[in-house]
Image (cartoon, rainbow, N blue to C red; front, side, top):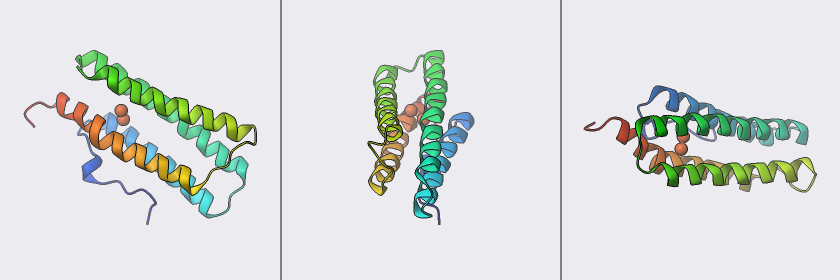
Length: 133
Ligand SMILES: [Fe+2]
Ligand SMILES: [Fe+2]
């Protein structure tokens, strides 16, 4: 069983957003698998780096879509994205400098952040894009 399960509650109904969210969930699961199997720090860092870069890619696409459709709660949403990227970037810098390691607490934080963000903020945007649904 995967560490993070994908389910209908996480689906926004927007194909591109949902596909990208699945990729983020996959990356968290890969990080969990690597930690669980005792992979070396280099491999953990590689997955963490991918996760940060992919989050940047996804957030950029989501934000462009928000601007395109005139989503009224975009600025609060952008701030939430920026906050995660800053945290991930700081973490990655510490990790690369040997000042931090990937832990189960980090995994729990990532899982909780993603689920909470998708369920509240991304679902709100999803509903805005399909009024009346
Ligand atoms: Fe978002
Ligand atoms: Fe998202």
